[in-house]
Length: 474
Image (cartoon, rainbow, N blue to C red; front, side):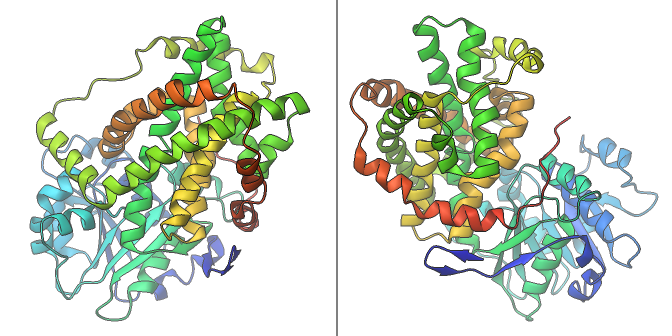
């Protein structure tokens, strides 16, 4: 894939690659998926379907008394057919153990899991959180085991739904990154790529577990979740203060980002959002963009620093200890969310145009994350997936079908805690710093940098690999 400054090697997926999977999974006869959250469910089902007719069995492992067991059984993983069992027993019998339990549970129980591994079994992760925790505690992965990661760039429901759509359009799915952290016997890369293909990834790009951890944790606290929550709350309040009714304010904030802005970026790229506006709209976009970029970049840099030095990880662990098994309070009670159902009910009546102010704010925050990742040395494939593609092709379509608050209240606890911590920071910075500055003329140099930004080249390269299908959200 041609990217700014050179090329990156990616693996293009598709169902035509399912037949070679057993060869790529050489030495693996049993894949244990530990956990049945959104990612656990999606990955277990996709792996089972992709490996149907082979002698590789996919088995789900759950802790005793897990409330998820009934749903796993409903999807065909049962004790009777040998595809559902105790998590440690499944771990001990599996050649590839994919750890998809919650981050806090993994931090608490990883030693127990490691001790249950059979000799030479591969450890699979879809998130770099455990690596950060091991380093914080002075520990490491057990020697003699391949350690690999395949990290879908989308929520579990997207991973499953687009895989199912791939039955009709070959290659439909969610992109994934892969990393090889330990390779004692030389087979780790084949295992990781086979896993990614079996998940239905349209393309798989290389990263490291360190890089994935940083980009993933920062991204969900920034443009993927935390920042978008702060943006829509601040824009809704701005519209209400300007005299808009609740429905109009919701349409100009949440509905606009999750609808026409996200669709435009997905189909034509970041620059197309501005290019689709009339001259007056471009002036509004320009002032919103240049006023928002600096405060957004400042917060994203702070998030990155706190993820890199372990502060964010420690805050998650401390919060989990404090909260225990208690449910977290929901954020969906603020006034704006009451208008969501009314807005969604009238979508068929109108074609909502891009709001230039909203678009300028959102594109500025997204570009700020792109620049922060680029300056920190992340590869372009990772930058565009973690900052743009995952947002517009996975998360924002679900937010459009539900709302942003629904996503914040129903994501992983790690992401939920991060969004709660940083979303209000973005909201305050935009209300107090960015929006007052939109009264000033746009910064011409910042606009020129956006117009010639290398992200446009990177997104165009990624777009050539995009399946011709959009996710369908029930």
